[in-house]
Structures are given as structure tokens and as C-alpha cells.
Image (cartoon, rainbow, N blue to C red; front, side):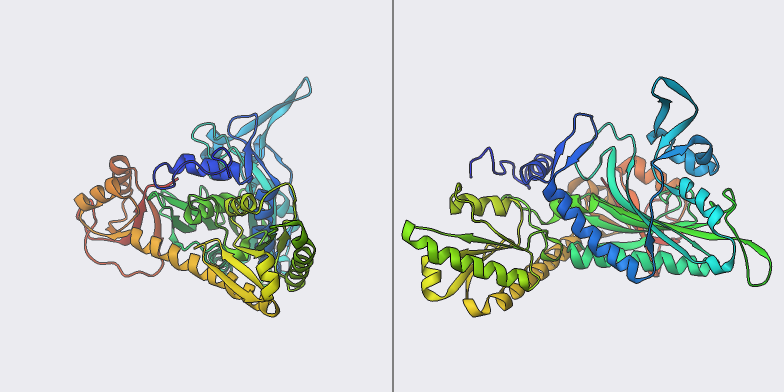
Length: 480
């Protein structure tokens, strides 16, 4: 494959350029005419569909349903929850005209859907019999990210899912928050092979309008963290201004409790950065749109009949076994060109079939993660393919977990804290007094924020900055 087609930047030397080349040359996405926007190409959309299909199934198994709400939100609705609205004001796109006619009220282009959804919930929830109300939405939202944009990671429009649920009590809401957090963890760790730290956001970093926010945080090769997903208990902060009330079993009227949660196509950006190499993408098999590609290898015209027949047979066997497979029988490209293209696109396993394979009644298998080449008897192709795919998934999980573990520095010495962030980045596990003043000063001096406060981790010692008794353990990092 020519340099113009292949990846020319090194991941360890120029991660931003390497990342951009991966996204565009692997045909995941392209740039749109408007700054901050991108076009999601078919291969990229197929990857998002894999994520969506898995997570949507989990939601429906637990009683959640999908719905859709309008893209445009009246300004008066946003202002009903003042704290929430003020947090999004700088990022909102506004619609002010319909054709040549000025609207009587500005309409916000959905930055998130709490207000438009809770306006509907105020009409739908009447009695304890209506609860819990478990609704999820697959949509896009727009936030004015005009500078420092990066495909999948930070764009003005992005695809995501946002769940919005209504409950009778705080206890029920707490259970919902943790249930979805666990579903996210399974999606991210078990499917995308990206290990995460979970816990609470600090008061400073929580979702605007939330009672509390739980989060999943991953670490990238350049020492920066990515927030992979969040799940929030919104308390009654939205139900009161939007009048979401229900008649309880006790005959009294109560304000409901609400939760919200979401992940976006940012998951794809983390997968690219964590698993990819200088040859292109490496996609974990469980989430790959194409798990296996079959490539025929011809040396002379007389080989083609038997090889084509064998390739068709293997393709049908794998497809019928539920393994997503692509038969690359394009005659305008050489086998070598195809090898490089599929490595660039990150397909986990390549199966080569040439004259010797036909003669020996076997196939040749090449793993994308370590490029290891093996053979399998033709009557064992399905079992061997499954074994290879699971081996790749496991290997990616092990390597990624080692990266995460190596990225964590444990220190309560502020000089070590600052030096580590400057020289290598990563997560800094420290103790913290819990005061916003210290949190703000650390961010000002180092650029690091509290990414997560772990669940149920014992605290002792003193604050890494001020020396007062520690109230919490916190993981700090610079982030995207």
C-alpha cells in the first residue's frame, strides 16, 4: 500500500496526526464543510451500530423503551431549570427565524434533552402506577465546539444515547444510576476492551443540575483521560420546576425523582487511540462490524476455480455460524493490497486461501492484534476462528489493562504530583480534603481535574495540596 493510502504518522511520535489519518484513511469519517462537524461514513456508522445494537438490547432486557423528542427546544423551557440552562448557555445553537419571519421565541438546537423530555413527563406521570418510567433516546445533540475539534472526540454535533427515567423514591433512582453504570462498564470493558475507573464526580465536575454524577474514566496512550460515560441522579431538581408529580399509594401527592445517563460516539475515539497501531485500526472482535475477512490468493489462472470454491465454502460456513465475514473477491486488487487495506480497517482476523491451502485442505489465519500466522484444517475452521477471535479480544483486554495500571501514580506529595503530570501524565491517585478551593488551585497550577472519586475506598492521611485531614480519595488527570 502506498504512503498516500497507508498511515504515515507514528502513534508514539505524533498522536494527533496519527489519529486523524486513522479516522480518514480507514474511512470511518470525513470532515464536513462546517467547522466542528463531521460526516460519518458507512464503516464508521457500522461501528456505531454495533455499539448501539449491544447496548439497546441490554436496555430492553431491563424494561427500558426507546422514544424520540423534538430537536428544537423553546428558550422558556430551558429557563425552567436555571442552573442547568446556565451551564449550557455558551454552547447552545439558536434558531431565531422561520424563513424570513422572526420567531416570537428563540428555539435552542438540542444540547441535551432534559427540559423537552421532562415537559412531556409532567403530562405522562400521574400515579405511582406510572412509575418507573424508563425511556431511552438515540439521537444527536449540538454544542458549539468551534475550536480544538477532533472527529468522534470533540465535535459540534455528535451521536449518542441519553436515558431519562422517573422514579418514586431516591432509593429507586440510586439503583437505576448504578444499574446503567454497570451496563456501561460491561459495554466498555467487555465489548470495547477498554478498562475504566468508576466512581463519583466531584461537586465541581458533576453534571449541571444533578444531585450527583457517577462516571467511567479511561486513560489514553498520551497520558490524558477520557470520560467514557456518565450516569446521574438528578434528584428532584427537574421534577419540581417541571411539575413531575404522582399520587402515591398513601393518597398524597409527591414530586418524582429522575435520573439521566448517556454515552456517545466518543467511545469510538477511545477505541481508536487505545488499540490502534502504526498500521491502522485494531477493532475488538466483539464490537467489529467485520470480524473476519476471507482473501483468495491466486498465482496463476488455473488456480482460480478451486480457490474460489474453497473461499465461498469458508465464507458460508462462517456466516452461517454467526461470525460476521467479508469475502474479498475483488479482482482489481492484489492480495498484498487487500492485506494492507484490511489491516488499516482493523478487521480482527484475516483468512487466506491459496493453492497450498487447497492442496493441504487447510486455511491460513492471520491475527490483526499481533500479526501471528497459523493454519487450521478446513473441517475445524469455525472452531479455530472462534478461538482466534476470543484470543484477540482477551489479548486486547490484557494489554489495555496493563496500560491503565501503569498509568496510575499513587502519591500524596504535591511535588511528585506536579512532576508526574508534567513528565508522563496519567492518573494521579491522591487524598483530598474535599474543598473546592484546593480542587480549583490544583487545576489552575497543573491543568488536572478530579476525574473520579472511587466508590467505597477508605480514606486516611492528609490532602495532597493543603495538608488538612483527607476527606476523599480522588483520581486526578488532564483530560480531553
